[in-house]
Length: 193
Ligand SMILES: [Fe+2]
Ligand SMILES: [Fe+2]
Image (cartoon, rainbow, N blue to C red):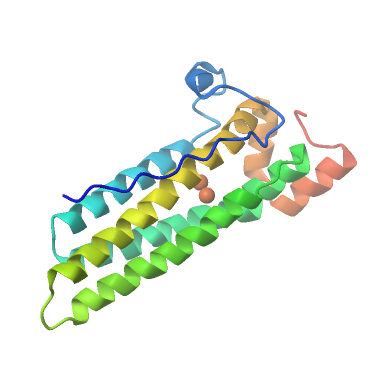
């Protein structure tokens, strides 16, 4: 199995006004009911690692391609929820800048396109050689690197704020559409704030 290139670690600069150390999250009274998105993130990391291992072990490319496409579809739904509700709400509520997080989504899309291209090259090859297999594994590793970085950054931005919400605010946030939430924040009528 080839060595994975080390990912340069970017010092994390908190962009949230509330800091709750990661090691204390599980002891917070609003854990886990207000941070269920962490379960999705854990699944994403697991599927991504599994795909890398499948490619490195040269498992059936049709299986890898099919699993990747189905997984990415779930990822896109998750990202759409974040970009159209979670990020704008937290930006309005606490002035958080989600520029780096949104850029992470864009980078994931670019890396995913490269995975799909590598799958296509292997499927279309008359003679699937080592280079094509390694290109697919490399594309999946590159996607995994961006994913791991994005999820860690997003969790540091989002989880303290989700934990900080009162149960009433969180329930209201969950139930109402974004435009209604924004109106209530503007009017000072958000229950639980
Ligand atoms: Fe995200
Ligand atoms: Fe996420």
